Length: 578
Image: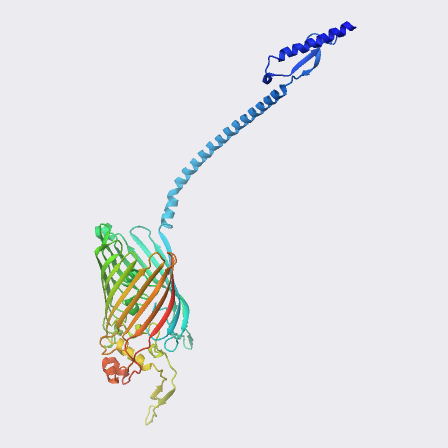
């Protein structure tokens, strides 16, 4: 018994030694688990299975756990790498499919582009929409009669209404421009204006009338509607110096006013000289205009046209037409239309806007005779300043209605009065017929300015009236600031034929502008209309009677306080342009 136990112990010891002998030469990183088998008869352990041996267990040598973990980690990492490789391959496949799809879409869009490009060229690239707004707050410290400061939309209560003030939007434009081809372009510009007038009842049928009331409502009218032929001098005649010139037909800018407004640059505060006196800013007709350039340098700019006698806001009645022309010479050359030294001449010859059978009444300029306007200008425009000197001559160009365009006495507008009394001569009937019309003379009330209004009509409506005036306009940009100093001075003798005309006046517009950005600017201005004669009675009644043939019907009378009262006003002007 003891022998068999000893033999079993020796066998176990031998198996352990054999196991150690197997493990020792292996490095720690190479250690592995071993499966043991036992002989039940002897208890001996074996590393390999054999006859009569049974499974004893698995022996894990010390230090082999780390190796197993590393093998597990390696296997896991290998699986992850395999999965990443599979995902990368799948992503690259999808990316290739996306690129192929993008290429297909790009080809399809490219095939669609001609239609989209045609749409874009026809609309987005060939239509522009802009707007222009003038507004102000005005304060009249001294109110009087006279022409408007800004435009026909600006009117104020006259004498006796000092300290009158108002907020106003005096002008707005919506500007539409169309350029379907390089050959032609079109402009349509509606204009807002104040519907101020004398309401007159409109008879409807036999017993009905509709009352017409303007009341200063803001209405729309057409300011510009013209077609430009842009390539006549480049494609038809091929005159190199006139490639930028064009032929214009329709309701368009007249040759002087719009050009001078841009030359000066402060139209939103005041009217330029001839526009202030009578010349409309737009006419209906046909014109040729543009620069004359040599090697991209401008040496001249011209605008010549034939137009209706009516302005853009009146219907044409005359059988005649008027001719206007402006020529600007740039002796030093100019980089643009308003650059450097310029010498400009303007001439206008037309007739009153009356139907042929209404052009009668010698001596009355509103119905008979011709109208002439002439201007000569010398001007220089630098980067930060500009100066304009102007001389004006007119014949029948400044009438009573022009003088009272801003404000005037009630008698000047032929307003109906209710008679204070009616005196009828007695009629004695001595024989048939018994029907008769009695002779009656109504007596109408008269204001304090009735004779003054008649005097203005006699002096300014005379067909021999001659206007002489001179003007200075300029501006200076204050360095490194958004502020600009600017001004306008105009002096006019409304009728040189009058020995001592109480209507001789001067006016000025002095201000400072704040350029907020390229779309918005604001200015503070002081403006005045001053009559520079001392107060006097107009002249004896006989002078007024003999001055014109149509003056006799108003004689005899003497205009007391013949020199009008001055007008002084202050404004905050605003312009928004986009």
